[in-house]
Length: 101
Length: 179
Image (cartoon, helix red, strand yellow):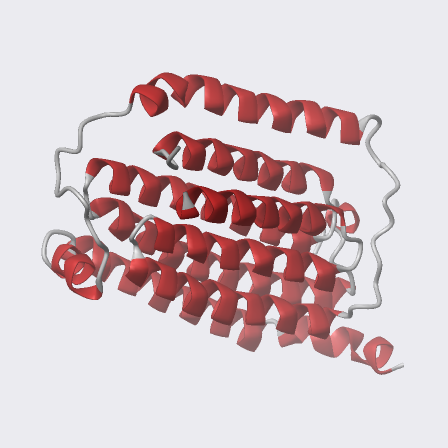
């Protein structure tokens, strides 16, 4: 019995769904960000598993690009979160539902 | 056989970490759960012979991104526990149905291609060393690589702008913060 690419794909699908559940379920904006990171990571795993299966280096290059975009997203997102927290003293998205500044 | 054992072990560890991340009420525990998932991911990359990406995963995610998360958690306050009361009726049930349906759809949609597999039309037994990754990254994908450089620069500038031009609101609320 060997580990096939299907194992990685199913595992990544489960992790992606857990990340989606986290975004839907949690109301702390930080934990929602972590859930998004979880989803990005599971997609990275599918890229690398498919690249390994097909013998293409592009899978790993795509994963590197996803990491760069994720790093940029986290930087800006956490800066927005800190700015919101300094103004409203909360990280709970339910308290941020009104569009007044 | 070693690969199967390692995959099973670290798949279980990663799923446990994800469950901790989802259920912990303290954001620090959530961050630790995500950290476990990141480490397991790095091990999967090693199993798939993507050695360079595994190293980058550890440096960027487990190092930089998680440190940034923990820094913001400490800044915002770790004592603020989230109450788990549902504000939307049946939120949890709906979430589980939607997430479970999503997983089922992804697995069913991809099942055919995953199980039958396709012939490796690239290099068989590809190993992702720095050399092979760099050949592709700086050869075929130079323009995309340069775009990510611009993206990171713009993101850094945006963060600095948020920090510099945000304080007008801070000064208004400063007496409250100091109390």
